[in-house]
Image (cartoon, rainbow, N blue to C red; front, side, top):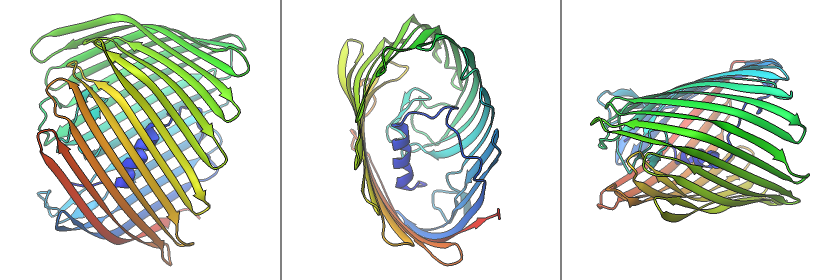
Length: 443
């Protein structure tokens, strides 16, 4: 089984806990970059000696109105017993982003590809809407996105979006994990009748075609508005109509139709914000409702955010919560931790509670060396259905030391311990050491 650094998994989780960046997030075009990093590492993975050649490329160029970014990661592996060839490619990832915009409008295009092991990433696949519990297979994801926005600071504006996603599974044991292609589009028009109200009209459509003749169709259209109640309070309300159609591989046709309600309320306080949210969405197996109350604290020495609430599905109530904490212990060290429990429902109506706990610590040992460590615990408790419960614990340690002439010494270790309710274990260990070198192609 090919490994990813445990630090990458932690970074991905922490990123998921933060709000997604939109087109309003700008990249500094005054800092162009063209950097190549290549190295040679020796790793011992589950008792096998493997050679690894990491290759990373980062390019960024642009002006005040235009930005182009490209990144590529391709770790080559030598004598990997999991591969048929002596020289093979590890978990490649590539992404290209183009953005062009003025003060009042912008267009953004993005292409991406990534390949990785399923058991190292998720216990529930939100994209295919299926449970994934310690499956040993791999997934390759290719995606594309095109977005255009206009009137961002005008009384009348809008947003148009198109996206495409292709997922290909290999060597999986779960019969529900099938290759699929998803196409989606969305249109939103904004109207600002007063400085305190920004209304919107929206329409969304999604089509997923599975290679096992399982197809899903969903449409959503409605209205919403963001209102400034007073100087400290903001309210966002959205009411829509959802239509869902799903055809199983045996020809069974399932439909769901009904209102979709979303409500969000935030109130600013001197040390952070209070928030309240409610959502109700129909599904072919029942309606899912979520209610959350949240609080953020931005103190001088630390940041703390949390949410607590309840979810309801098919008459069952389950607690859900999320906590994230970060602290700059001193100018040389930093600590982060998070705890999350959320409910997930697949297209078959099976439900699970997924718990994710992470913690990381990093310290600058000197001007040229640093060390970082992290730990992660994941658990999936199946509430309904015949899937197996699963849990996984991972630990990682990484060391980096700068050497002359843009060289750097890297070393580390990672351990993963996984087990499902049938007693099936999947333990993985890795120790590595190597040297990397970075080249900057720009003066």
